[in-house]
Length: 204
Ligand code: ATP
Ligand code: MG
Image 1: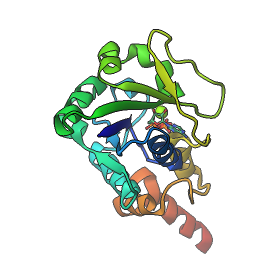
Image 2: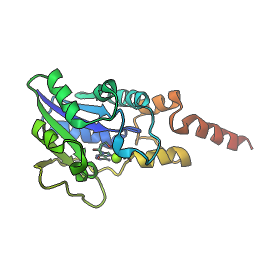
Image 3: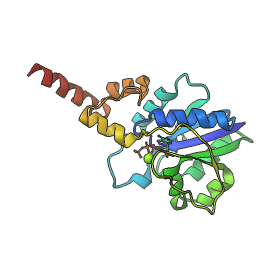
Image 4: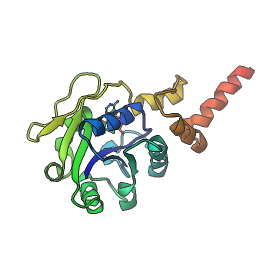
């Protein structure tokens, strides 16, 4: 079995994540790609508020529902504490005994790979896969061997999407409608508040 690990904060999951996962799966002939939801993205500490792990998992589950070969991963949430990819790879190799593992990252994440905990262990346990994101190309650390996979480059980020909730720009197609439903149901990103503000504005 060939298993891809695509980890992220997924705050929220978007078109860029999904297009990347299905295309890497196709190119590398992976049986599954696990979109692993970080419990505690320690590299983002002190930068901003992150939606709860449970809410982010619900969004990723909705995003992959019915998509062939994509699976939502909750191992890091069940484990608790800060999320380290080396531990997650070990969990996956226990679950999928004998599987060949692939760690998939965007070039922005790959560029910081040297600062990841136990990076060389990750490189031993899995094949490293990097995909380019739009913008200036970022080089992954050269002491590791990287497999570059070409995927459609989509200039979509969770950061821009969170801003769209605030300023009211459209979210359609950038976020799967199933995910937008979860966001509305759970009132994430001020979704309800911005709707209330809009309808209030119409009345006045
Ligand atoms: P944020 O803006 O909050 O950092 P993000 O859009 O970068 O969010 P993450 O959850 O941080 O999403 O990213 C998870 C993984 O997905 C990382 O490896 C990242 O490089 C990759 N990724 C995110 N967006 C894209 C995209 N549009 N194309 C390719 N890879 C992406
Ligand atoms: Mg990011």
